[in-house]
Image 1 (cartoon, rainbow, N blue to C red):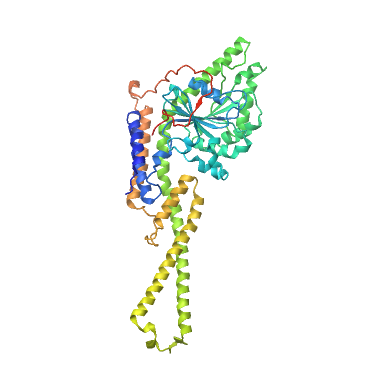
Image 2: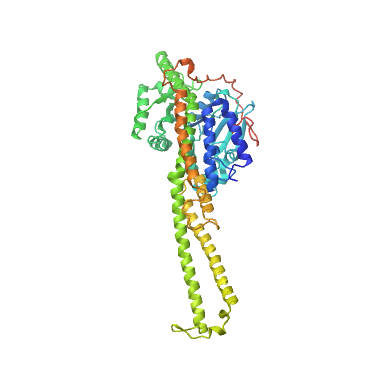
Length: 515
């Protein structure tokens, strides 16, 4: 009765098959997600067609952010060794592009709906978030997002997001909302600056949103700050001053530590006549590019920790956030219903008293009316009158329950942080206030000793998963190097395709990540 339906069960089984050989620890994490789903199904927090396991990306997610013309698309093409993204000196793309692997050699470009409606990707139901920015914006999802497929082997098992810049005034609020969503889900965030324009107006947006707001995050180490196209500084009398200017700009936003990388694209670089200076620039670029690519490669490990951390975070939310909110909502609802019942009961008593007074049944405090001559003296009619009063009270009571539930439900949805919480809290509250459930049960429906035990086990399992990941990727016991897991080498990528525009089709990509 409270299990997942066939569609979600098939997807979870497919995910488990994919993880069985790749990462047994994450396979066990899927089972923990299933346990948490059971609690959510019983509470009404999740529909049977949903699962917490499908609400997070299971593939390593790398986002490339920054200003327009900072070389983001060129950087992506260089990494993939594939001419996928259109690049140039001017802004060439105003959409977030989600890039995933495909077995087909032909590049496919799919509309934003392919991402908004598919829970396997990081933008599932993002249209609801856009509607918060402005009513109706969610219907324009294709104006913000697109999905591209690419056969590059470097992309296998990963998702890369190439973003537009921060200069789009008309769509700035929606762009920043999507950017925040991406940052929260990403395993690695590459923030690119354009060394050719040290003082662009848009740089302030980038510094404020991607530096000042990120340095205090618990996952701040996933941000890499990259000064791109640094070859333009080679003609300066003191190129080191360019580096220093950018470092000071970052320091003003609070970033005083961490690595600051400087790179450029060899094919598009300006000629550097001085041999010594050219060698110095190339050496620095090659060193920094190697470090960046190493971090990209490392993202598969960080992905595992992210998923386990997401599992623990979701489990703790039940007791630390959802239950207190539901408890407060039920308390408010109960208070409204009791007040409403008191008003109804008082109104019915007042109506009965008024009727009997008008009929002359009461004279002062004594019975003076000939009760034996009234219909009320007949037990059959008296019982019928009482039943009518009770039925009327019951009918009005349930009307009050429903009205109070709608009133409190609106308050509860305002407390939600996102669409998932909003639907979940409202679903759990609706189940807890259904007609046949007692008004005086204080705990939400579906919550009890078994649910508490399940969530405690899930939280305990996450600690075990972290320890297993540490044992797998670290070497605390000094085991021989041959026993430690090795990171796979980057597979050679196919030769770049001709620089032609990719074909746009309206079908799903065969090679998209499958859950």
